Length: 120
Image (cartoon, rainbow, N blue to C red):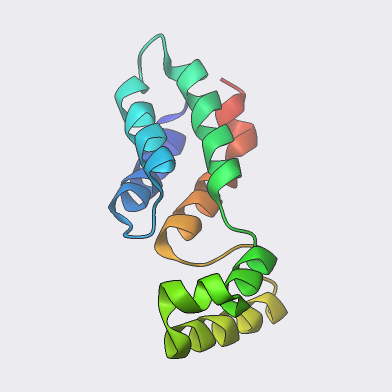
């Protein structure tokens, strides 16, 4: 991997790890990737990391459905769920494909480099 690519993904990975909304599986894969950079395990760990991010990033339509659901109301509360729903609909209209929480934003940025990451 180029130093530029490693630097970019490392920065986004650290943001992902620090995000309050990150799921445990993505956090573990992110930490494993950081530990594997520059080792013989880098390529395999990168493939696993990409797979995990693809599984865990929330598509915008799923976020909208969850925010509008009974479960969403229970998790966020009525006002927060309503605000999240309005926000999600607004960003979808503006072209968003995924949730824009800190974890999903970092995952989307990393996944934008998927082809480059998997080339190594």
